[in-house]
Image (cartoon, rainbow, N blue to C red; front, side, top):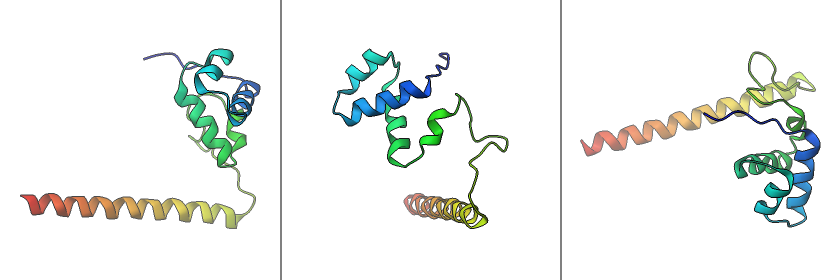
Length: 106
């Protein structure tokens, strides 16, 4: 397994600005010495979702061991938890449907 590379926040922001300006991914990677195109896609996703605070976080499991996002209010925390639980329910529904289809084939 390769070593994890940590890019400064300035490099991440510059890469995002270059992509928004229409610079091709390969050119951005070469100019800023970014190893993996998936990394650039992740930064762009964070930018589109308004999660700029994530660009400043170090490499690794940022949200492990209570280091998760800070919520402005209890309502925001509950909304986030509600969204997570709804996603879990959807996954379980899909799994149950797949299991039902598998059993029909047998």
